Image (cartoon, rainbow, N blue to C red; front, side, top):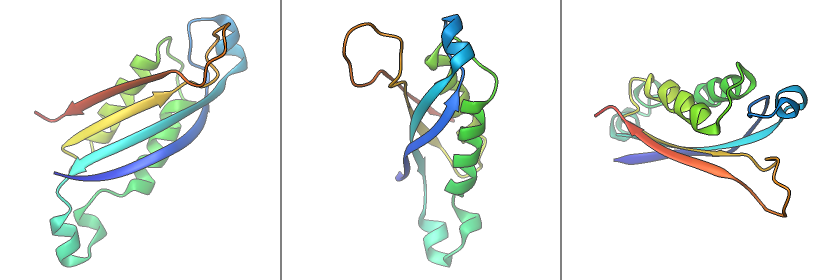
Length: 119
C-alpha cells in the first residue's frame, strides 16, 4: 500500500476536560498518513484517481476547530472517520499532538496515535 503523508497541520481548538481549555482554546497539531493505491493516479496523471490532500487538510482543520471534545482520542477517531470517507483511502494513521496540554512539569508534547482501516 502506498502512503500520502500530511504532517504538522495546525488548527486552534477548544478540546479538553478542564474549563480553561474549553474557554481559552489551544493549538493542536495533526499528522496524517493515508494508505491508498496511487498507481491509477500515477498511470493517468489524474487527481481524481487519488486523494486530494488539500481537501483532507481543510476537513481536518474544520474538525479541530469544530465541536469540542474532552479527549484527543475522540478527536483522533473523528479525524480517522473523516479520512476514510474518501473513496480511495483504505487506511489512515492519525497522530494528534497537544503541545499546550495543562501539565505542571516541563514536557515537549502529548500525542495520541491511532490507525484505522476499512477492513
